[in-house]
Length: 318
Image (spheres, rainbow, N blue to C red):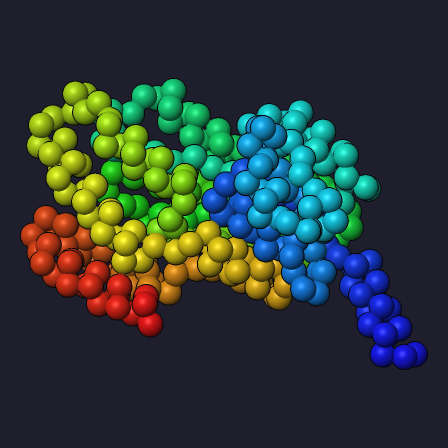
């Protein structure tokens, strides 16, 4: 074969061997970045089915996809809170084949517990946890039958370690972590891989909206001291953390591309600078060390906290 013929043959083999990736929550943020990056993979290893609940919000994804749109990336409607919607989407795929599921759809919640309604908590769990369970329940039997597949789940460092005023959101991510860790053992028997992707702070419209809403939150349901801590301590500290440690959606997408292409781990933290925080939990099984450390950093030694963020900010720039 001539060089040109070999190149064409290699391309066709790669295209034929492309793995179909179903990504949820692609209208913005991490989901959009993941779908666009995998669709533009130079080796054509992936054929992306990018999904979102509201197709009216597909514009940013179409622009990000560029030339890959309707070639290595197609956009479909999928609502992770609706079993019928998930089934309809999967049924529309040839042989219902999903080689890699990237479960990314989610919502956030911060603030004093007394100010959160039970209805809002249920809605969050319906998306963050039950949305994942519905997706896996739909694609797992086919993956088992083929004895091949990879379930990639967007978790969070808050699925490892709870943080101040993130009680309900963290609880949903703890549930996700327990679900996947338990399922991973059974999945291995069928040659199905499971990966929990655990970002720290990620600067997206999703995060900005959560914090904008938090600044306008009605705090009349809690006591004055708690409201003061939330407004004057937690919110300013969070902004500093995002400024020092925040990743872009594209950085997280790059990590997922590597995970999808190689032998994946069960857990992958995308932000190495955040690892000292989560390491505290594993260093002391009693839980005293992380609790005391976070308490002192937030309420007693804010100068140490600010100095630490300054060092991490310098490392991030490097």
